Length: 310
Length: 294
Image 1 (cartoon, chains in turn orange, green):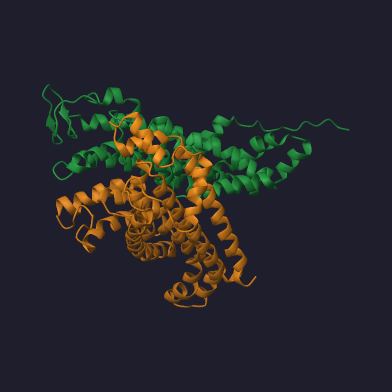
Image 2 (cartoon, helix red, strand yellow; image 1 turned 120 degrees about the horizontal axis):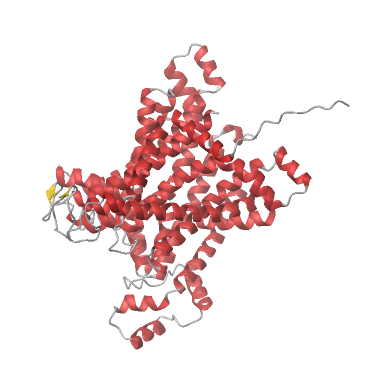
């Protein structure tokens, strides 16, 4: 197990190197734009060149890349072009905000989708199953930006219950968190529900469940003691991988509700070719992806006795 | 030695077989609903010029509620937007954009992803290692982040959206194809072809690929739905097809600030894109259900 985790860490470092190099090359395509974006469209050619020179853009790309890499390793992420402060200063608070958003979303998605998935998979083909299955397809079909518009039309304009933006300008406000979480949860829960349902339905067809039923055990005991344990292994993996998806959804939701998080930061940085912020965000994204994948794999082995003891 | 003729049943033409398998879909109510929704939007897109009551980019009468009469005859069934363009006409023409670039991008992604997957799965070895590592690198990145960075760097245009979708989806397709190939390449008909001395590319294209089509078709449906969402999201973030041509995501982005007073401006494009994606998801579900049955 240790070797497995260590190998994963090795892969992660390698992936980070490749991703950061690719991003450097990609952003290299339009170096002139950076100066225009910082100095504005009315800056002269000379001003732009001076700015590029001062920020080291005329050095060969490998030199700039290795300078960035050396600094990154010792924890210096460089300065943001857009915000004109060290990257860490903008990145960490934003990441914390997104962490709150993601945790709250998972706090809603996990229990709801597990319960619905188990209820649907318990009696495959029943009316309840059909209702849950179809409604989970419907909610996954509504893109986040569309459900954001629909939900705010109802809760902000029609009922006037919730605030329409979540800037949190006057400190943390739980009320402003409700709509973003709702939008993310509505989009995400369908997939987890469907996976849980499939896994549960499969377990219900196994011989040991039939044996337990024929033994005359109460239905509730069969479900709680025999079926659930095995049926919940797959959803665990799915949920871990869902965290990576959440990172995409967060961009749209944070943009729509003006929530000051990681996704909005990445969007702003990309639109302004803010290379060091993009690189730092990308490293965070890769880290989250590989870490969740590793936890999913380790957890899967641990939860599944057939693998654990072989 | 007696002469004996063996009656070999004639193989049905592939078109006929395709139609027969499509007819199987009739058994799935969910799939039929999905197909109906998709056909509806395809027809709207094809006949947008005839159906749309107004030209999509004409500014006629700003900020009009649904059901208002137009100054020179006709009616704004879904109202107009902030600069006076008829929303119904724009949604109809927007369907055209989505249904051209969505499938185009998906086809491009498959034509890159399938050869890569075949090579990784069939050839194996170092080829597989390199291709799988590349796929893992790209997939370890949140998809939307990838789109945003690519589009923000190379600029927003239809071609660039297709390129970005291809780049971001091909690795996922590659992984699926690779998995299917690993399963199929130990089948007898592949060994038979190898014994006959068929070249590897022929075995991959003629023996393996057609037998992997079932799961790939279902995946293509789901993926198409997701690509449509992606095009919508890019439009919504202001990175979509350049204005003024109608684009559902862009329509939502332009008008959402006025949603307080004029909710219809953003609401109808939302319903349009959601229903189309729903169509593809339902169709995928129906196809899966039918393919599991036999």
